[in-house]
Image (cartoon, rainbow, N blue to C red):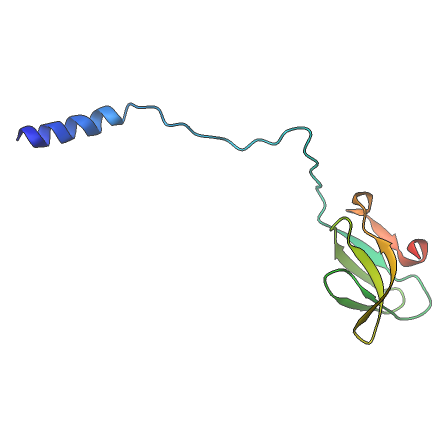
Length: 105
């Protein structure tokens, strides 16, 4: 009986001990990009193939694709599933925008 009373007392007293909760906060110096992608429009007069840094995409004239905004990655020309010359590098100011391929070439 004394043993049960001791266990009960420990449980009751431990319920009054404070629990430390850490909350996740972001510091103002951390750069947070609110847009995870940008759009690229083929405004040329022909069908093009590009490598977006994560896969190959064919764009008919006037068509549009969405590209993940991984800054520093290169978008390249593509031909028959092989990477070609670099068209442009993705920068943070491209994120969330719609860009035309003719202005980036």
